[in-house]
Length: 283
Ligand code: NAP
Image (tube, rainbow, N blue to C red; front, side, top):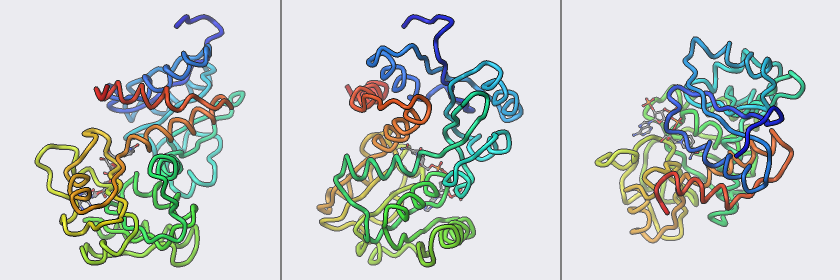
């Protein structure tokens, strides 16, 4: 990589940011395309977010990714926010067009792209059960409804958070797009697509997000965790005869969509996937 006065810079702001795999993924794509661009992580604490965002303008960065814990708070510092990110209340991608900063959210569409490309699953008119109603689940639920899934059934240990997401979906998208559900294994078995959007499974010894007998043959189970690449819940779903997908494809495709926003170029998807796998020690 040769850095010069012409090099376009894309940033990622997070707290912490040390473990992000996005620089490896995007810099591999720049190298493969021979683009004079570089993607750099910055550790930005909450009280530095406003300054960091105006720095994007001041230093003429092409754009940025925004990660935990800034996805919601960054919105007030932007000039424009696209409709999807506005409804979600969260931004993961900023594009700088001549000093005008526009926010987007590519997480949910990244998930649906992975579902279609990696698992060959079309969510149209399929019943979907999502466990967890946090930031990731919000994007996924919105994108699934927009892709024609329905209804989306939601469960979270935090009942008010789950109910707020159901209300937001039904208000912003369409009546009966989503319904609140208790954690009922018989009901989960009746859904074509089951998603774990909780952090349960990241640590060894974590309990399953729902009992193993919630899975059945023919079902697709997506665990949006990508490290470890195969969670205990994925193993249980496979034991029951189901298909599984982890969160690597979601991470990849949110990055692909962000890349397209910044540079109006289609990136080399498999180069980016390989870079992620290498970063995770899967090669
Ligand atoms: P989050 O905002 O903290 O949301 C997680 C939600 O799950 C919270 O509402 C939490 O409730 C709830 N929860 C915890 N344990 C539960 C249980 N046993 N049953 C039902 N709900 C439970 O986190 P997030 O940002 O959405 O991330 C969730 C997971 O997705 C993490 O593992 C993250 O690494 C992964 N992720 C992957 C990608 C990707 O690209 N593949 C992208 C984003 C996130 P409480 O707050 O009450 O605990």
